[in-house]
Image (cartoon, rainbow, N blue to C red; front, side, top):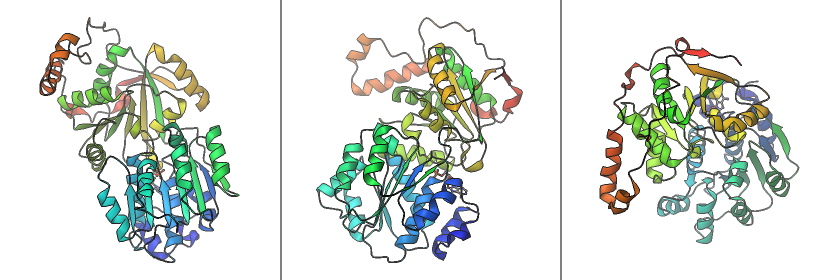
Amino acid sequence: MEFTEFDLDSTIMAGVSNAGYVTPTPIQAQAMPHALKGRDVMGLAQTGTGKTAAFVLPILNRLIKSRNRRVRALIIAPTRELAEQTREAARSLGKKTGLRSVSVYGGVNIKPQIQKIRSGVEIVVACPGRLLDHIGQATISLKHLEVLVLDEADRMLDMGFLPDIRKIIKHIPSKRQTMLFSATMPDDIRKLANDVLKDPVTIQIDHKKPLNTVAHALFPVRQHLKTGLLRALLRDINSESVLVFTRTKHRAKRVGLMLQKDGYSAASLQGNLSQARRQEALDGFRAGKYQILVATDIAARGIDVSCISHVINYDIPDTADAYTHRIGRTGRAAKNGDAFTFVTDEDKDMVLSIERVLKEKVERRTLEGFDYNKPKPSRNIEFSRPPRARQAKRTNSSKKASSARVWTKVPAAKRGANVRKSFSRVVRTSGK
Ligand code: AMP
């Protein structure tokens, strides 16, 4: 199948060609013919499958028939990053259409959003909380809305957004097209789908399995050796851009700083950062300014950076679904990628649950030359905090100096210049 078969407006086809899309992905091939006819769609698809264009292109094709600067399409997304990314897709695919869009989320000044909406936009990509603020302040009108998209609905459920979504829907005309995308289908999402979709077509894209362009492996390791293993892996892999996931914000920050000290261009992305710094980290990673991004799960879903060569789970995620989402950050849109997960003895149950969901055993690997028997130091210097008594006395400004002192105790590691070696030469496979 080719994009030309959808009979999209020529201005939209210009955007498709400009994005370099030739063949529709399975979710596009299956969902778009229905979406273009105005049908409601329930899409069970994980990120990386091309689902954004599967709803953005039909929206553009519908709206272009009358550009009237009223809000006619609303896409609700769980995170600011995903909202920004989806808006960017709408902007670039619709570049020649003359349609206007805005992204609306919290953590930034509301005034520019109000001005943009007032100036006239057809497409709004919003996070639920800030959208409700706009509705409450009457700075947005949804009464002309024709299309509603709920993207990553299961993630919105996890984040506790369902009540907000139900409130928002009360302000939207009931005569509309609705598309709901979710990677999983827990009962609450099924119920929401029943309430908001009318006679939908359901499209399911192999949502449990990681993309088959991803090779993934587990690296059994003791907790105190994870940092050393990360450093050793980074030195040995042929990495273009690496996304490292940690369980906590604190650890994302620490690992990011450590890698910077090692000489890598690295940034961290975690919820304690201001929106401006989150965006800077993400944009810098996307543009290649940062080779390594260390992130908590806020970056796991929806974030589209097309050239991630490796995902490294410094900590195993909490659910099997989160695992497939995280490793879905690499190998997107038919590029190959590797995903490595550090696992400790305590992670055994989670490994079993991941393997049960994937219906396959994940390969175990060891890194040749790495000392897996190194004893645990009496105190883990890299991640230890200053003693409590000293901590309590510190002022805010001395806090920074003290955490820097912790870092100077990290043994000088080799710089990250020799990352171009072939990974296959240094990794021994220990069977499936
Ligand atoms: P998504 O799942 O929407 O986040 O998309 C994942 C990646 O696939 C993005 O980088 C898209 O630009 C890219 N993509 C979407 N559709 C196509 C297509 N038909 N051909 C090639 N790449 C695509």
